Structure formats: structure tokens, C-alpha cells
Length: 155
Image (cartoon, rainbow, N blue to C red; front, top):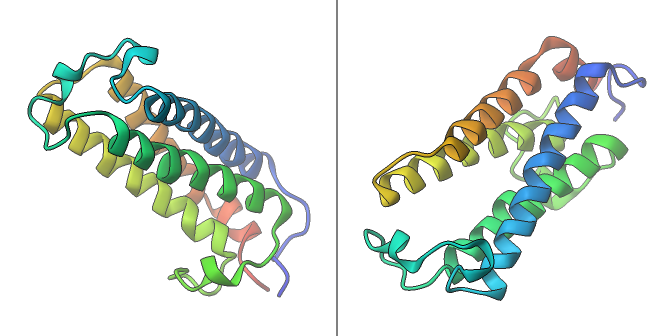
């Protein structure tokens, strides 16, 4: 199946950049939490976890690394190359679109849920939460632009 238009518009490239920004940040942040589960590489005290069921940053770091790091980077790459990937297409709720378009929406929702849970666990909100919430909403908004959906919709 071919996408409706073969040439990507500027909005498609904006979406790709948003995914790379999220993915690189979470890949690095999650990786550092995996390497130092005590949070020392990011100057994060373990006391941040006092309202959670975690005793170290290993599990949150691993989730961050994989779900908000590797996953958005893969989606960004597939938004560029637009190749099929049957394992990901299984979870595509919008069969008329390329799977990476649908997964772009999923990533926006995942980031919103991640931030909400993090704010609840930390019992507070920081500027980083506001910035990443705007990033999540930007991913959602740009994904839903007619020009972006049109590009990734099969003809």
C-alpha cells in the first residue's frame, strides 16, 4: 500500500523532530537511571520515590528508556522510511493509515499518562513536567493535522 502523497510536508518533519526530541531525552535519561539506579548520574535523590513502590530508579528508568526512548525513536525512523512492520501493524487501530502514524498518537497518550503518574508519585509538579506535557500535546496535535494524517493514509 502506498501513502496518499509521496512527498512529506513540513508538518510531517515537525512530527519526526518531536519524536526524536522525546526519544533522545528519554533514551539518555532512562539509560542514566539504569546505569545508576540510585539516581546519582542525574542528581536525583532516592527520596523522590518515597510515595512510590520503587526502591530505586531501575524499573522507572527501564520503562522510560524503552517506552519513551526506544519506541519514539523507532516511530520517528518509520515515519521517515514509511516501511511496513507487521508486528507494529497488529496494534494499528487505524488500518487506513501507516502504523507509525497510529503509534505516534499512542506515544502522545503514553507520555501524558507517564507524566500524570509521575506527578502523582512525586506529589508535585516541576517545569520539566510542563515542558513534556506541551511536547505530548504537540505530538498529538501535529499527528492529527489533516496534512500529516493525509500523508500517512493509504490511497
